[in-house]
Amino acid sequence: MEKIILKGRKAVGGVAEGEALVTKDYMAGWGGVAPDGSIIDVRHELYGKNFTGKVLVFKGAKGSSGYASAFQQTRFSGHAPAAMVYTLTNSKVALGCAVTRAPAVTDLDQDPTEVIQTGDWVRVDGDHGIVEVTKKV
Image (cartoon, rainbow, N blue to C red; front, side, top):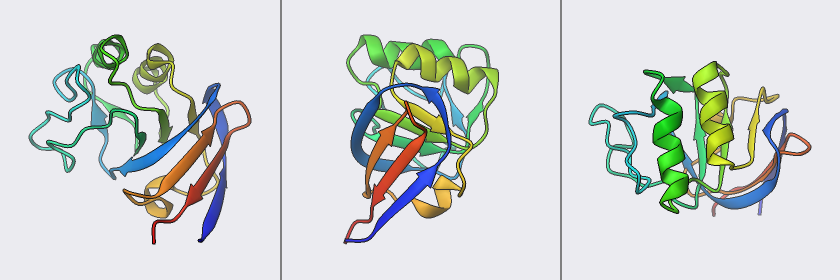
């Protein structure tokens, strides 16, 4: 199996792994995700998909200051992503990752939305800024 190592910067510490759910779109929080981890933004390429227990790979955050609240609700309901990997940091995504308490890595040496595909197995080491990708067969 092909393994790829991406190196980046810690956003939230911890280690988690799971199946990747990847989007090249930006993620909305409020009005974009439901407490059960479903993508409810009808204009989003992942509309109808669920990120519960998966490694969410995305460009960054868009939308209102309710972004973090929406992601915190996924944690409270037991439906948060296992980890997050993203490219563009702003206050919305930083706070969203923090309240979700899922390991998160950003500022990677390669664009994770180009390298990782939905279904790949991904291990996120937020403590060291390392993302290990095992490509699906």
